[in-house]
Image 1: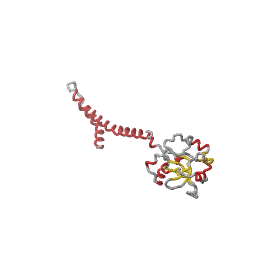
Image 2: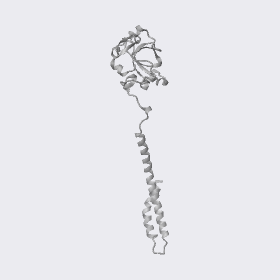
Image 3: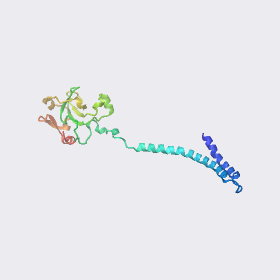
Image 4: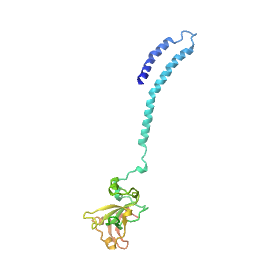
Amino acid sequence: MDWVVLFLILALVPAQFLLSTFMAPKDASVSSRDWRGGHGLLKRLEAAWHSYLQQPTEQHTSSTASTSRQQTEPPTTHNTRIDRQEYYAGSKMPRRDRTGVKFRVGQVIRHKRYGYRGIIIGWDTFAKAPDGWFEKMGVNKEHRSDPFYSVLVDTRDRGPRPQTTYVWQGNIDVDVTDSDKASISHPEKGRYFHVYERRYGAYVPRDWLRRRYPRD
């Protein structure tokens, strides 16, 4: 198809010359209508050619503009990624919203499924962890929107290496004796807490941790 159009445009120049020579009126008796008709054919051929040349350019511009809009369009909120420093209740921002949160920093808990004891050192109103962690731990998707807690694990239950776990709220039980609460063993315990307070049945957070969880 392209070679046909090319042939037509190349033929325009000699055709115009011939028409100008042989179709030009020799005297006043020749009808001007015939003259206009010859040039009208040339005009239509030229218009068709210009239309052909402009069409791809307009399509490309439209496509480019669409791509530009897609590239500059801001991401939707549900695609916002969580900073890795916020994983496992690691965010340093103060938590004032306790919506749905049942337990507090400093409380001693027992894991319902695995039975180990530990102290809560942080929480998130919804799970913040890499996708691979959810798959590895077998966390149900419907549980990811529930509160999760960072827990120092008693080395007497799981050791000898000290562990910190990230526990779904539904797996937490607070049925622990006072003697067990006061004797939780973990090398990082002193970093997070002052002492165990029997009146409250919980450990007293250090100032920096209290600022992070002001309503606990």
